[in-house]
Length: 333
Image (tube, rainbow, N blue to C red):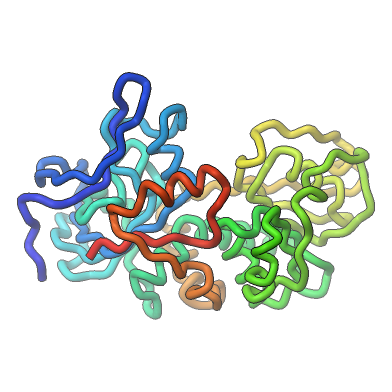
């Protein structure tokens, strides 16, 4: 069992004179954030929110000097009074991690016990971070749609922003559960990759983000929307009667230009999906499902890119530029 060192490496984003300086630094153990549980981080994932947290004008970071990384998985070094044991495999994500509390882009992290999930049987730390916050959000979306009444055989399910972390995992989970998945993307070169993940067909992003009538032809039994803006408006006006869209993203904009007609004439529902403040018991339950019935099948395809701390900068830039596909994983130990 490794002891807590006096120093460790971390990727740091420091706000300085209206800009952000990003670099790998050696930090002292006194730089760990507040909390009960010290974790030796094995893997983290790279998310859109991490890119915003390490960029000037991102409006995400709430510490002037921050270790980003909104999710992490590893091994408990010091359990404190958490009830965990040294050596336990755990994961943590959401809450203030990587935003107002140092996150997963470091060899060590300290977090409150109430943020920690024991790694479920059947999941390794790398697999957990391939799923990560993005996959957890996808699973929340699928669970919400099914709780609303979505079942296989009721019609095609649209997934927007399908090459991103949330979208790609949603495509895979839905396909595994027997749904006919139509994946929306603006990346023609990624069409075969999405089909390999389980999509029955792909659709061009230009179609799902175009303006249209207040109501259009009923197409989708449900939708997982990772984009927002005009794309969310499209999903709402093309849902089948009684359908629902689970919305979790805003890369396409924060404004929603729609009418009341989808709601009052077709009885559709808009289900908001938040992965940050999910209560810990619900979080632990869903991670158990991510290791069992909601487990994605194509994890190697979704998270095949590995980097170390020194390779983070270009990957963060690519995510902001819309050039990412699937999940990128940060290998820390």
